[in-house]
Image 1 (spheres, rainbow, N blue to C red):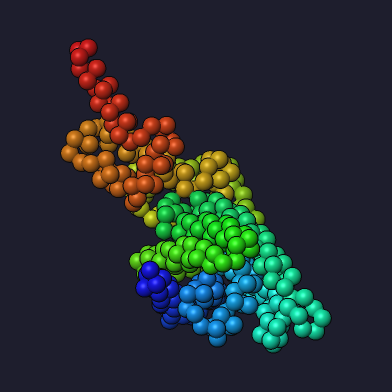
Image 2: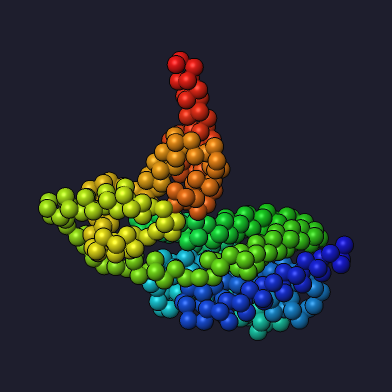
Length: 378
């Protein structure tokens, strides 16, 4: 069992260090990924905190434990600023401001623990109280930051649908899952902390935290090494969002409205531009020779929809038309979906179900049943 514990510990440490080096070497100039480096450092400290009782080194424990007790105060705001840095521009001053609770914990709890030999009794101040108060306050602040992460992610995804027809690789779903995982980690941490408070001899419960955190790190490693979008700042989105936020909607005159409506109809119904799988608002506007702001205003205000839903409505209709023509007799449903502009099976199934109320296969069967019934009546 001891060998298994050591394997978990060293694999977690090694992968965490590998991810830190990966981010540092490949994305030095991107502010969001500079924040990601510090997030990974916080996870490493948290991991070492849980692992300290198994490493059995008093020197490591003396360094790590006082810092690990307040690390949630740094991890929370760093996660929040990371997702905000992808969604919009933030400054180093804002990051430092959000880290003020961490710095306070560092000065009032961690540094005294390093300086004083027996911090619970020296200088007439009972630091034992802080051993429980500081981590508890850190957990509250961490929850607050995660809540704001959810709000920011929701706003980010809403913005994507205004400018992109396909959002799978840039919707930060991996980050959302990761945040959910950290919420579970916090719950496990609180439960294990309560058990240790009641039964100090049950140090084995810390291995639950350690094992779970190792899984999170491996999850991050998998997507970091195999999914390129994880460590890429979507600068194009930043530019698009900045332009939209800094400008008032461009009004469209009545004669422009008629002309633009005609051009869009030709572009979609005759040229089938919606078949481009990663079509963006900017590319569509460029083809129409208008600004992306004007096209966004036209779709949002006049058509009462988002660019994402507008494009996918054409894709769905094209798919349905090909099914009615009998193309599914020679091609799979997925092949027809790809030809219609979708580039993800999951996205296609979800969009189709939301639009039609049935699955693509059910739609195919309903068409075939209708054709059979028509032939029988003849």
